[in-house]
Amino acid sequence: MLLPGAYRPHPLHALMLAFPVALFPAQLVADITYLNTAELQWTNFAAWLNAGALVMGGLVGVWAVVDLVRISRRGGARRPLAYVSALALAWVIGLVNAFKHSQDAWSSVGAFGLILSILSAVLVLIAGWIAWSGRPQEIV
Amino acid sequence: MNRFSLAASTLALALAACGSPSDPNLNEVGPRPAIPERNQTLIPPMKISLPAAWGNETPTVPAGFAITPLATDLRIPRQMLVLPNGDILVAEGRGGGAPPLRPKDVIAGVIKKRGNTQVDSGNRITLLRDADGDGRAEVREIFIADLNAPYGLAFVDGSIYVAAQDALLRFPYQDGQTRITAPAEEVTKLPSRLNHHWTKALTASADGTKLYVGIGSNSNVGERGMAVEEERAVVWEIDRLTGARRTIASGIRNPTALAIEPTSNLLWSVVNERDELGPQLVPDYLTQVRDGAFYGWPYSYWGKTLDPRVKPQKPELVARAVTPDYALGNHVAALGLSFARDGGFGGRFTDGAFVGMHGSWNRQDPSGFKVAWVPFSGGRPSGPPVDFATGFLKDGKARGRPVGVVFDPTRRILLVADDLSNTVWRIAPTTAAATPALSVDNTRP
Image 1: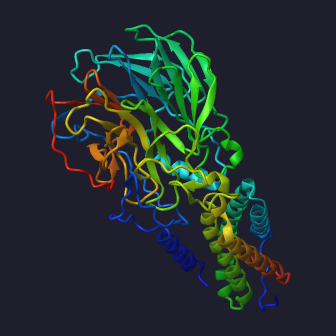
Image 2: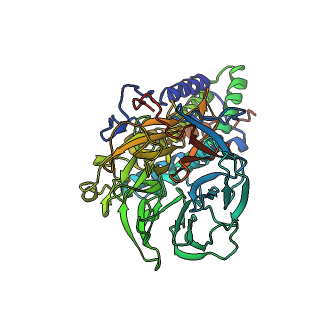
């Protein structure tokens, strides 16, 4: 993920980003466990992990967009643009998945929910990788 | 990529995913209702009919009948009982006790609350007396106080039985009494560790030796796990004197009212079925409660139609699932059942059952919100349901929501508990032999 452009998020921004980066993959694990066991508590866990990822991911997403706007005024915004895009996509898929997980019992995950969880997890890891691999140069 | 346009398009997609509207040509009632394809949507199509006041208006009843508010300002009236001397008992309150397990439970709880009364649970039984028969209760007393969400009521052999949400209670009663202060005697405990569906319906057998209690499921379709469904979605038969009980029917999702059909002395129930399979699934139903029968929940609906949301499935149970006798409509939320007896109101309303329908939340075109009449012949339903009391929904706002219904053969009146306007309505013929001409509701509630 070597993209041009100097971007390193504020430490608090980075800490908040850690939540969706941890929670979306954790949700994926919970979903897989549910599909393997049919033990309903795992889909309950998954629904809350997803909700947590959406709340923190939404806040950090707003911050990331603000960063993107500020940087793009000076040019060289490809890295933050890639970061925001991956994060936004992970979040929107997570939102759809929140509704999916509101369905009852097996319908709360199923094949569709699992695919959504995989996409959210992969995209948020990509977003985190981009955000945290910026050159050490203060922006904010 | 613009996250806002993405979010907006997702929202549009999600709203579109709210599901197709109901098909008005689909038969939703009777012994053989249409069972369409499942239509699960990402957002359940919630349609909360917000409350509105009655003002000077009242529900609409057939020609030849009059309706009056027997009592108002109650605290969530549910089921009722007419005592031998004509006094009317009204169980008031709201129970429940199932902690939210998912974000959905929290959100749906807030939304559904907007369609209900904001009055505090009465947790009591009120006595109403209309000795002069003018349609207004001139005596109103708190008959029994400090109950835990009372619902089902029965009178047998000088005792009043109350199905609270956690126990079946017995109170001694003397004719004319307007207040009971004697402590309750517990006949048996009722399942209540969780109370997702908290109402405990109650009726006595024709000979008075047995009491029947309806116990609803602890979830829509088993999404809290089947461990919490032990002795849920069942009807119990309880020996009145010893408290010994056995489960006579299972898989009966939420049996909200029980009654004895007067010509056959057989037990019948109205039952609320599951949600989130589409606007026209699954029909709430009226059925004879057959000893030993399994009615499908949660594994199948309307007999043996599999519900794929339940894993693991139980094919051996589904193989013997019984199809209910009579569909009342989808999402109508039938909560009241009372048979006409001793000639009923005469005419069309001689032999049959009144059904109180609380009204839907899980479809875009509201259903229920009325009292229906199901004609019977030879102890079985014999035709499509007919509207008996309507007008609870007007211009998209709910003015009332019917719960319990009681036909009093001695005074030839029908009582309807309305837990939104907190009123007990009294419907009586304006002439001695009312034989109103009615148009048949072609079953599209």
